[in-house]
Length: 184
Figure (cartoon, rainbow, N blue to C red):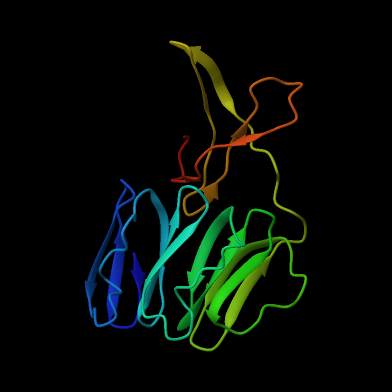
């Protein structure tokens, strides 16, 4: 669930979003194409969803650019909104922001958590980069499909990549996956 200014959002296990409360700026009217949502956040009169592809979608009031997501950002892992803006952790551990929020310090890296408030933003920075790899278990080939399991933590988003062959240098990203505390 997420709370905004006199409205709320809830995220279903199926990646759908439900909104209720004040809707004078369309903040509880779901944006077209809002599917495969992994995380939600709200500001005063706007809403933002993190999609499985590592992108975001925003709807509601845009007086201060809070729904104008920069086209240059992608591979997002987490989102958090303040009163008039949103922060996002990118896969490289840096933070992107849009709308009106206090500016994050230049060169901030290894960010593992974010929060936005009325007139402030917070970032939790690790003393070293997050592990790039997760230990997988139970790799198997079933009916021509390769399957494996990975441990997850609730509230975290995971980006998985694969290669078709070991010598190939190109990794292919899969849609982001929301952790639930169990194995995926």
